[in-house]
Image 1 (tube, rainbow, N blue to C red):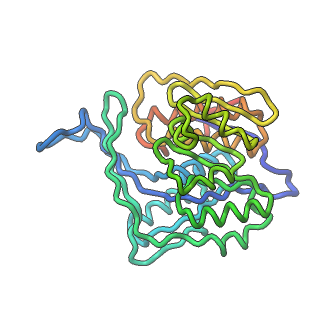
Image 2: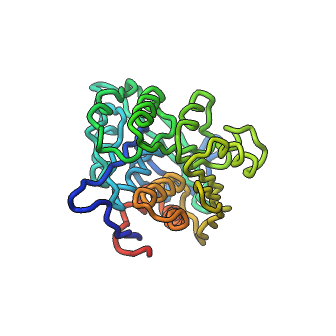
Image 3: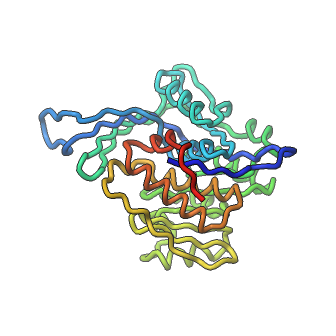
Length: 312
């Protein structure tokens, strides 16, 4: 459990917020002894429900740690959409930039979690909401936003946000999740100055066969920060103008579920970056929080527990 006490702004100046462009989901977790094969009945050991989505979860971490955060998204007016909004608000994420569409369906995932090792099998029912339009939101954001966070979802809105950020001089971060690379989002990655990518994403983006080769290609245009994560192997960090380093993963004796660990890592790292922490502290806190997440079902439970411990 974590509390990171650090002022975000002087009393005279309001804190800059992080604007995330991404898709929030609702996740229903079923913990099972083994994944089912063929016909039959499997007894559920535990049932859990909470919100999900890479950008949304990262924003929840930032908001819980004290960084103002707002999500640009679109949802239906169904019960799932209402649950998504309620939890985001509970965790401190601003939701006024989420467009609600009457009669539309919000995104829902059913996730089987194997008890012995935290392995997952996901059944995903996507939303059918129209894509969000960022133009109106961005026109009202001048001077308020200190970082735009993307992961390639809502491509048109993400591209609008990227263009706006470049014109306004606002930094852009990109979350490249494992297995999520597609050629159509290449410009979003290249347009970002803060790149936190899973090793599989980095290799798919570059066509490289190793993490080192991928990093060399990703650093050719001199981004402010490159981070490549690789699960239990830890993360490799290249801050501009500083020595690169490896941050070992924090060992977890009994992994319950790995859902959201990478999203929490992103949120914690970017919170530290907004606080102007050294990169090593950002990476250490991010690794600690990712490990805490693996001790619980779902990516949001560790966020809810923030508050009683201090990371120096």
